[in-house]
Amino acid sequence: MMRKPVIGITAGNLKIHDAKRTFVNQNDIQAIINAGGIPVLIPPQVKDELDRYLKICDGFYFPGGPDVSPLCFKEEPNPGLSFVETARDRLEIDLIKKAAAAGKTLLGVCRGMQVINIALGGNVYQDLTKQFTEPQKLLQHAQKGDINEASHHVKIVAGTHLAKMFAESTLTVNSHHHQAVRRVAAGLRVAARADDGVIEAIESENSLQILAVQWHPEFLVETVPAMQLIFDDFIQRILVKLS
Ligand SMILES: [Mn+2]
Image 1 (tube, rainbow, N blue to C red):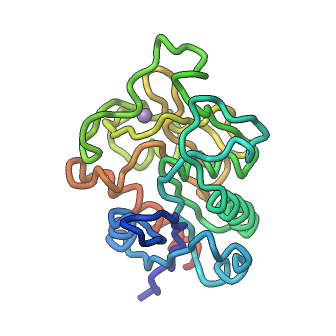
Image 2 (spheres, helix red, strand yellow):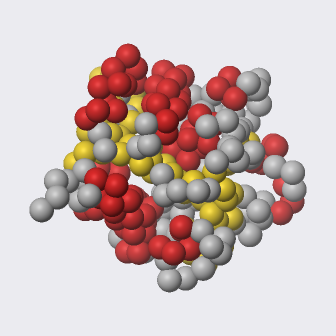
């Protein structure tokens, strides 16, 4: 039997009850384990050890988190910008560039999708409500309901890898973001959009290297079990390369 792929997962730092913690949400860890991967945590503090992680890990998963600093895509902060974690920005952007160049398989969720797009030369709306070109059309993307419940639809673009993964061309997803991909990086293409035009998934144009979604499949798997496909497909894409 083939060995299980080792998946590097970038972590965040925060302070809870006086204790500083380095964390990855349990749903992210569980989704990777359920797909057949072995999770390895990559905290912002190890930014000088990325070459070692590239050797250790077969693929990298970039989960949700705070806003990406606009300095990373050469913009000044919009008043709608929220909390940022610049050490995590720096590590993730370096890691994405190195991992992409090394041919590693990548999966991004929410912030993870945005930071992949930025690292590869694209940018994001710092705040959809303040910057989206047609604000009157905007859906509610920062859902007020439970994150484990779907809140809006996305349409999958025909002919994409994402379209091959799901039987339906429309998915119901949760939505916990106020930023979104704006200019798509070269080498990536749009794989799904919401009805207002907001980009909800991107993927590699000419390979199966990168897939990223704006929603949180790791929180949806209990109510929409098909969402585990996103993690299963990630591990499968790695296994095909390792075989
Ligand atoms: Mn959304």
